[in-house]
Length: 466
Image (cartoon, rainbow, N blue to C red; front, top):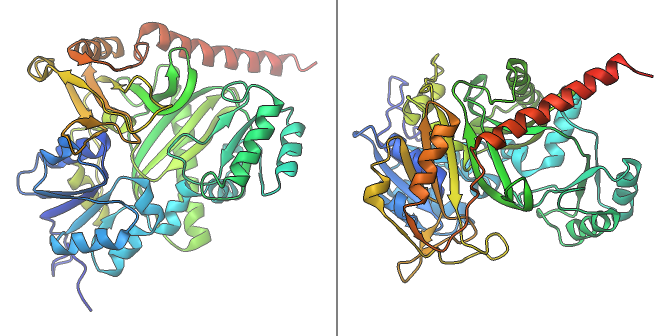
């Protein structure tokens, strides 16, 4: 039997050639971090020509992610020791399974574990069994009328969710994207009839109120290494208005918590993650491996799970890695070897903002015609930028189905990090849009006030049940 690539005879991992599968900013910062080890040769498999990635790697291939066997062939041709997968599409198609069948070491979930992201019904039913308090009330329906009836029983205070992957653009919530009962009914019909999320089912979930946050973890079997909480902003316009996007930006503060969080909120999120992984192993007999992204909400009644992704968040991964002191490859190898380890982070806050084409997200595959004063931007201490766009045949930046360029800064406070990002964006000429409010004191105070009001209302209601 052929030995697993990456292992030597002493059963220690010997990795010299790494392939990163993914195309965007989160892949660029991943490669940049690993690149700090000069002994490692890094290769990329992407579906666009990301100039930031191209400048960092020994070699790359640009092809669709749909053919996972083409990715395996490329890994074999390049004598790759370890494949790191940070994008959802090939994971849901079984890339890790295919790599393992070819005895190539991979960091990412097998197809069954990727269902935690790719199948919301699977995840909710798992948590319904192992930690029901972690999720809102929900129902799964194939019949539009039954789904509509269930939404009515919840007084239309619902979120309508496709079952499968929708690049972060499929969920619609009453009072936000859905204005009234008729729009709820229409969207239910669309999800089922058009198979949005590649399924003819729809989830109707009780609408909950609170503030969302993300906790990303390195996972391999029983080993779970959590990172600081981050908050991202999916709405296009300031004040959480406008259509959903893949995300316009994010922030984190010093330490592991966000300004509106308590220590117990973070601990509840970790408890949900651990119970999910334990439940998955009990139900399937398999372990999970890879980057697990948990999106949660602080509510008056505790922390609730919104969704899982089995890949790093974009932009949240930039907030995390820009202050990470460890080398990502070292973390992954120690996980595979079962070694105890700690993650170390600079004690700094971060802010990340995307500049996007002016018609985003209504119009995709647009050129991003901007001119960066690169020399001046790189002189800003603690500031970096990463590409979530590619070069077209004419050599121009094209946003494709993604966004544009992410600017991320670290500083002692969120406000100081925001000032650095604003300064960098002021050095970009051309037509683009971005959310100026992310990272401002007013926005942070509004988040703190929102959570405090919810908690006060809940405590008052408990104290006055009549």
